[in-house]
Length: 464
Image (tube, rainbow, N blue to C red):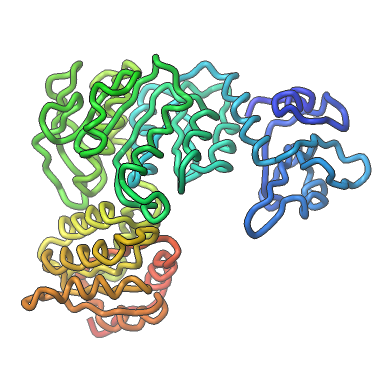
């Protein structure tokens, strides 16, 4: 973060400063546990905590300045900026801070694949530029401003992820960062329980344009039926990518090398035939790469730079990362789950396993509302159709995975239902064998990542 004085910060957030205006801050924190000496501590009220309760701890840990809501009683001589709403003030600070950087800003949203696409874009751009990207999934009204405030003088381009659970949320995030390039990966049924229809989800995702001017560039997945319908309807220049023909950035001749990655060709307005490779499993990663290629060409990168950036890509932890123990492969994709990402993960499992014995350890897909039963049944049918030998279904909704798999009277899938990961663990430990390949996929609340780590640290089937 660029160093700012207290007086400047107070003006940025339209707050009331009590203390010296010359206090210098070069870090922002909302967590006393990770607060560094000389930071500005912003007291945020959350669902389960209130940062105002930790102001004393923040000061003890070295906070040089605190930002609190009006009316807060502070220890004597603690320099502070008083505001009406600290979360809103954090967003204002990020918005004003972003104005200090005359660099391209890319924003990424979509129902699934946001983080992977952000990582892919950042990897490609890193072959030419010094890139700043939002950490992990810092994509909400708190995480995004914190990511913006991590921008440094050296950065030449920034890539931010934007998530949402309802209307107006992405709009606020877009107005915070004012993106020059907006990427929408797809319109699925995640959050449909809240928004009611895919059309409403599309409307919410299009709020990413609210902070853009008409000179911006919008990059859309042309293989998505709702996004493809936006052709010639937006004010901004629009670029479509996909594996269907007639896309502006078109991938063809896709060839999976299983665990090693994917070879493919790409045709764009600037390049007739780029031969590229992604060192990550899964054909679905091609869509992520195409978004990155579209961004790269918009920022004047050449074929060699794009190729080098792609080849340096490495996935995020818990997103299709692969570990091995005692000859057993574990595919960790336990961060979240939606029907499309579940399907992609199953495809990766089958690509990697080949003729080896396959397992899916799958948890509930959440926030699907009235779509939940059929969505889970459909995945169960896919598991059976794919010839996967073992399905371990975990959660309250997971019964529909089992019912879907068992609809096929000739299924070869042994489907078992468990209420929790701990109940499922003895079953897996007893039956797993050397050579097996296991996929762990489910919404984060199911905590399949913990189950996987326990299996990796414990003794498995000694008779295998």
